[in-house]
Length: 104
Image 1 (cartoon, helix red, strand yellow):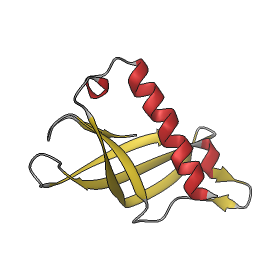
Image 2 (image 1 turned 135 degrees about the vertical axis):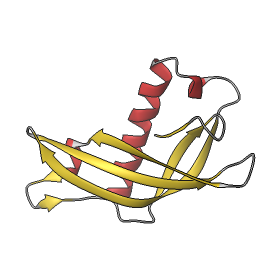
Image 3 (image 1 turned 90 degrees about the vertical axis):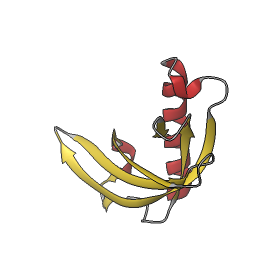
Image 4 (image 1 turned 90 degrees about the horizontal axis):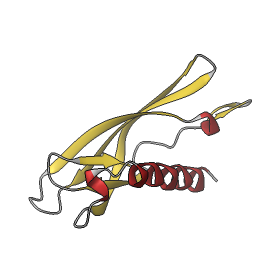
């Protein structure tokens, strides 16, 4: 189940964000729903690097905000090919304000 894999990856990234003591983990930060607008993957030094572009609606200003994130996701590299979530797949974004947010 690709969606479950994407969800598990998001939970792992949330854990890393919280461990960093990041401002996004501070009280008042929100988790908001976004969507993948572009995604690509490539093998780099025996790791699978995934670049995700995403967008979501700001809960404070209602503006559409966007960002990108580069991740190592070897779990998405399989013998039968690469299994990337399609454009339009839901993602979770940690949101502090319109300048401080990150896809988990």
